[in-house]
Amino acid sequence: IMARYWRMRDYDVLHPMGWDSFGLPAEQHAMNTGTHPEVTTKENIANFKRQLRSLGFSYDWERELATTDVGYVKWTQWIFLKLFEQGLAFQDEKPVNWCAGLGTVLANEEIIDGLSERGGFPVERKPLRQWVLKITALADRLAAELDGLDWPEGTMTMQRSWIGRAEGAEIAFATEGGGEDVRVFTTRADTLMGATYVVVAPEHPLARRVGESDSAVAKYIAETASKSDLDRTSAKAKSGVPAGESVVHPLTGERLPVWVADYVIGSHCTGGG
Image 1 (cartoon, rainbow, N blue to C red):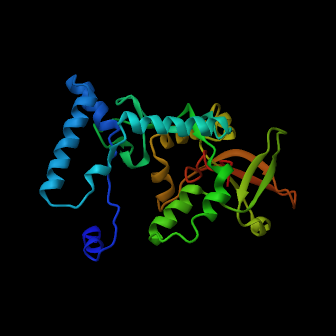
Image 2: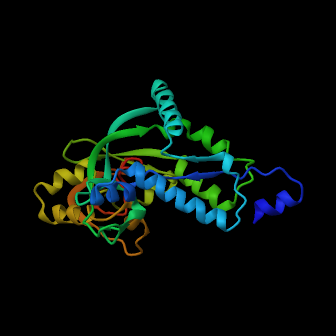
Image 3: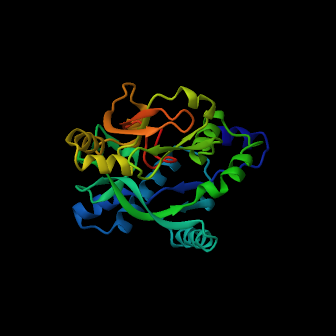
């Protein structure tokens, strides 16, 4: 509607069409039917295109692309190589939503109540070695270049959340046993004096170590593995279990109990809170 409106007011309107054609549905259909995904993807694109044209939408069909086009993939690979050459792409072990039934990793939005949206298979959190982009190295520049863009506020908020830039301090709490410090990132270091306990994520090394000998912690970690990050952070009711260990307050020297709680995400900052 907006494209037609501005075009009729004698403006030049760029109105291309793109098909996000890579994904789990195409893979699953290929495995279920034995049909090559290239065949069904092209058939589906042709069908959608026919429907859109019949509705009279004013897309510029000379500016059409699909993420499965060889020419498109070529440039995504080129971009990845440039990031790799600059040290911005590296391999690391990160927790993911693993679905054994589908044999793949799922996004948070593809999980409902611990099950895959497609097929209803159990999903668990597990570490997986994968390629990671060092977005944090460009966080300042990415955030600054959002200023001045004429985008909806909701879109701007999502972009800032994705960039994840935050200013704060990393505070080290010494463990009583002399092991590795529990490090916590906070944007409110001024509240440190009011700290009465420390929380670590179920994925945190301390939680894993305690879980080897504490059945309650081990059970809690296993239960958390079936939840997505979105489920864990959006839940109104918070849960947790005592780790049975203490850390030392860096200013007062007071002993603070450590809890394991799923609302802290292991892949976010230090995995402690």
